[in-house]
Image (cartoon, rainbow over all chains, first blue to last red; front, side):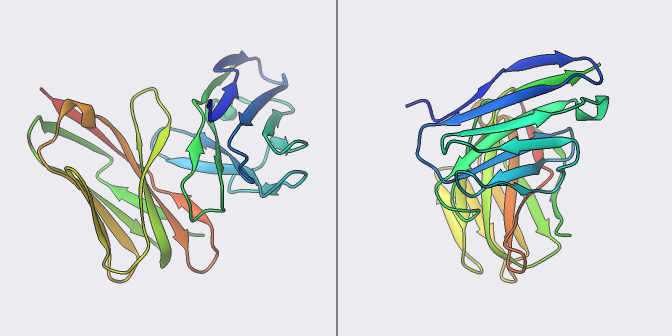
Amino acid sequence: NAGVTQTPKFRVLKTGQSMTLLCAQDMNHEYMYWYRQDPGMGLRLIHYSVGEGTTAKGEVPDGYNVSRLKKQNFLLGLESAAPSQTSVYFCASSYLPVSTEAFFGQGTRLTVV
Amino acid sequence: GQQVMQIPQYQHVQEGEDFTTYCNSSTTLSNIQWYKQRPGGHPVFLIQLVKSGEVKKQKRLTFQFGEAKKNSSLHITATQTTDVGTYFCAGVSQISGKLTFGTGTRLTIIP
C-alpha cells in the first residue's frame, strides 16, 4: 500500500520554464490538496479538490494550476516558473474534508533559478 | 483571514528534559490537529482534538485544547532523540471551515 506518491522528488527549473508535479493516492480518498512549505511559514494551501473533476483555490493559488481528471491523481502545474516558487511542495489526501487525518506524500523540492 | 501562530519557533533541549509548544489561533476553532515532520520528511498526523478543554495522551506526549477553543499545546515529557522534528498544529475555523497550519516548532535534542 503506497499511500500518497509524488513525482518527481527533486527538480531544478529555469525561470520561465513550465512543469507538472504528479500526486497519486491509492486510498480511494475524495479530497486532495497541494501545499507549499517555506521556512518559518508552515504549510500553505495552494489548491485543493473535493472530488474527481473538481478543483478550488486555496490560500496561495497565483502562478499555479491544477487538474483532477482521475480520482486517484492530482496534478499541479507551473506555467511559467519564478524564483519565488522555489519551495518544497507536498500533496496530501484525506477521506473526509479538513476534520480528518491528512496523509502526505514525500514532497517535491523545487528550485527555480 | 485566519492565522495560526506557534511558539517557540525553535527549541533546543537536553535529552530527558521536557518540551512544550503552544498554538494560538486568531479565530475560534472547531477542532485542531497535530502533525510531526522529521527532518527531510513529510508531515505525519499525530492526533485530533475536538472538545473544549480536551486532553489526550499518547505515551510521553500530552495534547490539550483550550477552553475557548482558540489555543492548544503539545507537551513532551522526558524527550528522546526520536522526538527530533518540527511539530505543526492545524486548526479548522468554526467560521470558514478552512484548515490552517501553524508556523511550526522545530525541536532539536542535545544528547
